Image 1 (tube, rainbow, N blue to C red):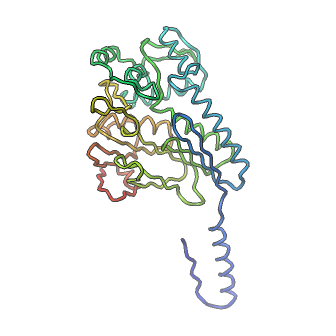
Image 2: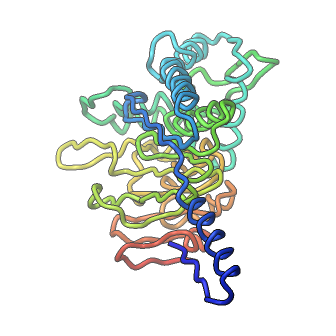
Image 3: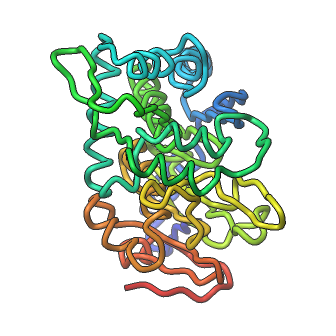
Length: 350
């Protein structure tokens, strides 16, 4: 809290100073109205919070975001029948072209660019592998795929790189490509939400999709305080970040969704190069203005592992990242170290 000191001189100067102090404190105490909404979509809890001078416009904007999210979930869910992803996957399997909307093409092209930057560690074309491991179901049934199944998939190595466009018509060179945008769809949803809120004239907001966030502006003139979850104790934060302006913070973790089979734990994040779950890093947090890019990068860095995550981050233009390995060791980039406040843990920054 800032303090205004007034030194006694002549009475008129004292009165002027007191008036200025009153104006200063009144400005400090101005509180915008908080408007909140929660909904279940994308298989997780979504929270939308805005700070505005008037509540009705904020409520209306949040309702529009909710409507976009419900439609988005139907269209982009990898195994939601009737959605655009399902239709594209069926067309690819049938070796047929399919014409898509400009927005769909733009997202695929952007995802292709992100995949290439990551050396295809992030690859939305591996839906068949994800299905093989049983992650196209809300409840995993088991068992894991056999070695022969994995090697058969690797021999074909379907990838989003196999897709190409002629105008707005999508083609695939490989009929085993199955699109699954679980690696960056939440990021796209965050970007869409902020676009809607900005168009409604809202300058201060945070959208939280299962712990992945994009923020704009500030919270009553203060930066947003964001905690990074402790993988060993998920109810606690191991670090705090201050975000303001227009930023996204996204975390990918092997501890968030997994299954166990015969005493072994398998993460839902799969390495396209091995056909198996990523198992070296347990958590990666990335800050980037664009949530779609942050989401893809967090996935790619986690798959890259302790030896290569920095190289992958550089290729993807990521300057702010924090990673945690299986032993609980934390490393982060220098740019991230300037932002994060670690809570009782040692850290390596270089």
